[in-house]
Length: 113
Length: 109
Image (cartoon, chains in turn red, green):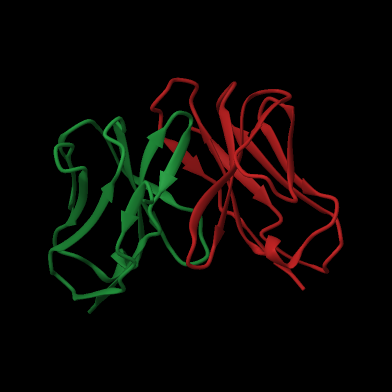
C-alpha cells in the first residue's frame, strides 16, 4: 500500500530564515505530487504540483519554491521566510491518470515569528 | 465568484442524527468530486470520490452530485462523536483540486 511522509511535523522559524520541508511517497511510481498550504479561514490553496522529476508548476507567485530531485521526493523551500508564510503545509500525491484521487500526508505546521 | 462555495458552519448535532453537508460550484465542466474529512491538526483523509452526477454510498456516508444545479452533498447517517471533524468538498480542475473552505461538524454524545 502507498504511504506519504512529511517532516518535520512542526516548525517554528524566525522571519528571514530559510525553509526546507520534505515529502516522500512509498509504494507507487511516477506519482503526481502537490504542495498545498492551509491557512486559517482561507481553505486549502495549491502552491506547486509536479508530474515528474524536475518538472514543477507554480500556481501562485510567492516567496516559496519547490523541487523534485527524485521520483518520490518533493521539497518545499524558501530562502527568507515571511510572517505570511505561516500555515499548515500539506503534501499530496495522485496517480498519473486524470481524475485520480489525491491522498494527503500528515502535514507540517509552520509558525514564522 | 469563487469556484467552490461551502458553508463553514459550525454545525452541531446530537449523536444518531442525519447530517447533510453541502457545496456549490461554478464551472459546469467539473466532472470529479470528492469529500475529505480532516481532524484537527491532521492531513485531510479522502472519504468519497464521485464522477459526474448521481449517488455513491459507503457505509454511513452517501455522496450526491447534481450537475444540473451544480450542487454536491455528503450525508452522514447515524452520526457518531468520532465524526466530529472538518469536512472539505473538492473538485478536480485539470491536475489541481479546488477545495471549499470546509464545514466544521460537532457530534455530541
